[in-house]
Amino acid sequence: MLYKEKPIEAYDGIKVFVFNCILLGFNLLVCVAVLYFEIGAALALPGVGALVNLYIAGGFFQLEPNYCMLCTFCGKYMGTIRTQGYWWFKPWYSKKAISLRLINFETSRVKCNDATGNPI
Image (cartoon, rainbow, N blue to C red):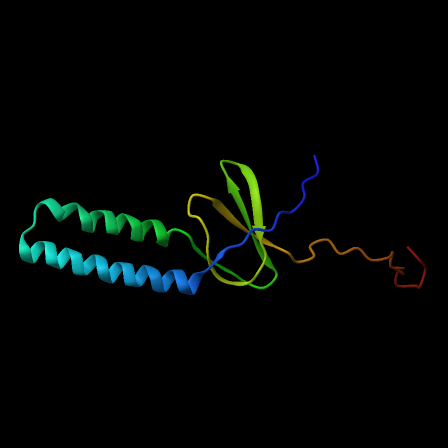
């Protein structure tokens, strides 16, 4: 079976990282407010915020030049990310970096001679 490469778009990792830091700061502020005002009913809010932060943190990756990121979901090919840089993509996708270097380099046959000059 022949597969065609499907390009998929990843999100800018710096923007998502800044958003995650702001969300973490807000989460810490809510945690301090809940503890200071002793609001028992709102104690679940910092826990939910921490889970969201962990979810976001699971999607960051970096692509070097001459590499691509192969994305699969439950073993099914979903697409490839080829642009180098710092990216964020859905954490539930499995991601694997693949080198795009030329691995097999074939050349023409080289003539080889022994010590007396006779071809081998």
